[in-house]
Image (cartoon, rainbow, N blue to C red; front, side):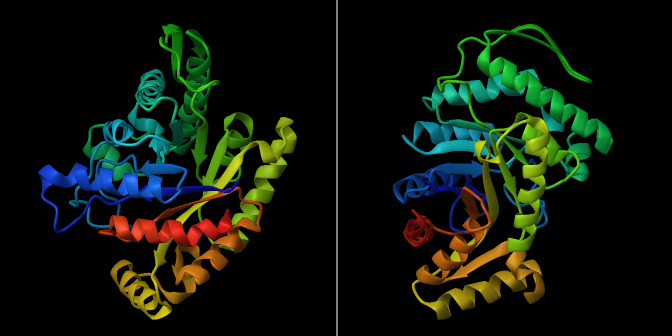
Length: 317
């Protein structure tokens, strides 16, 4: 079964006051659940990122939002795409995600990566480690979280992080704990750590890029003694779908102008068209060997837009 996810990267809704902001988020999450999406994701950022909007746009803390969405939903899985490893102590992160799993009755996913936003990190007073140290922290976090998801008491001695008889009670609801997704396309480190520790992987790019990353991931899996099919591989991109091609094309041109994306790089980021066109483009990504697709939609998209997206993607089932 194809895994379909909806990411909400923007909390900017011009017609929604701050005291109603979460209500709109919950409406979108419920629309995603009703439309057949399997997972709902928010970003783990404190400032809005440049590829989505100005840094001063609204941004909420990921796991607080996800726990609140858990209380307003019943089936859809919930995760951060992806947790920046430099922002949280790994044992604390394991406790947070375990709590989300309890609150949601077993629907949490731990999305995690090596982090990249140095300006945001420094603005919030977090030190910004070297790339080498961030990947050491990522491997420590993967080991610690897996241990704490599966054992009531954990002792793990990592390169940087250590836990000594760390108690995690209650254990997650989901047997084996929340699935762990590693995000990113780095071929020497990110994909190697994915092959060694992860249940899921998410990447970005056009079809040739995704095909290449999956080939590299398969090589790492062979080295680690794993079958690549054990890892649910997804790709995240933006989706524009409309009832008619002409309306989708108008929205596509608006989105390109707003984000400065030229025609030459459009396939790296955007899937667009009417329902049939979107289903055809999405199916081509699945032909690379992906087992799922994650999509976000332009800022300000409505619950109705989410429902339309679900209808279009239902053809992939």
